[in-house]
Length: 508
Image 1 (cartoon, rainbow, N blue to C red):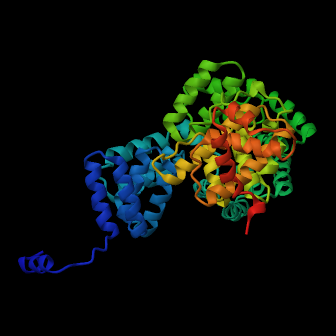
Image 2 (cartoon, one colour):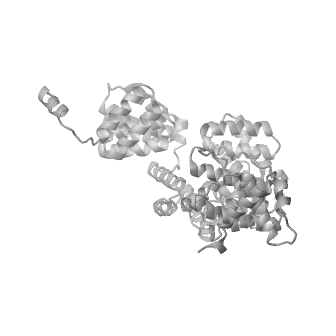
């Protein structure tokens, strides 16, 4: 920029419109400082603004590889290569990422291509190592009958769509994959799961049976069927397939992992622990899901130290899992006569047409030994469809923290405190006690909507119980409930009057 241009720049107000290049340069600055989180943020913004810039795509892919996110890096580099196939660096990193994800034929092809393009380049030595490695006899033998790299790429893309909850898009992509690759059983299995997630259970089962007809003993198909039978409460079919799975002694790591996770999900904890613990002892370093199921299977099969160690590892990988500890609550204390432990009762509340009933369901979810099973099901709780109030109660049941400086959140926490007082008195909940809670949650829903402060949780709990009991029994006194909750009779009267305004019969 010359002096004249600089002068004009200083003397005029110029609207700032950042570009992908701007954020890319900021990302490079952060990378030099080894501030990877900021670099990641800036590169993501650069991609959003310049989605077809091959240099930005490549740099973002390199960062993803450093974070061990090779599938994401692979997709980014493929896109960069379609934009600029003549860039040697893009070609080299395609060789590297393919080597990491096990696409050795493509890794070999791109490494050789790099050497042809730039024999004295910066990555020549690394490229030659990739060529040498991928041409070893034992590595080449792994490629026999393996799915093509294109099939694996599309399969990985469908898996990410499912993780994002985009099941219809995943179904469409997977249907295309099995049409092009009719022997790619992993795609069939994922398609079956996608069908299950969108409520097409019969299609899912039909597809899994087709896999088993053509590929007898397919462990993933057997495990997926077991999960479907478990959620359907099809005890007879589940027992039959579980007995069969118990006799399998798989060799491959992914099969042992799948078997262990499936046994854990359906409550066969000792068998789950056997497989998952065997992987850990062999040095397997899994994803968050591995440590989640290892912790659960360990805890419920009596290996508490292993469970807590696995959970600590999980929290380092995924801190948001705090609150899902298998020892909260104790499944060993499960009593199905208690309403909070009746799965069907909670599900009925969660799917009720009235908000007050649903938030009661979310509150009881936090007290239920079925919590993890309900949360894990793909269709029972769809977070994107919840109201803000429902999300608050769900977050509370999952142990998330709240901002007490927020007036609204402070009021919510006081409402929870009043609810906890009622629960502590009446737990375990019998059928009769649920009517009290239903009335209370009607009041809570309406009060929260009107920004009520819930300033005295103890008085509110006492007032609620007095209102409920006095409407059903004679000779109920305010003094009785005031003394029980440690407040004065006048305070109780005050809060009864405040709560009365939220009863439906007082609507204008």
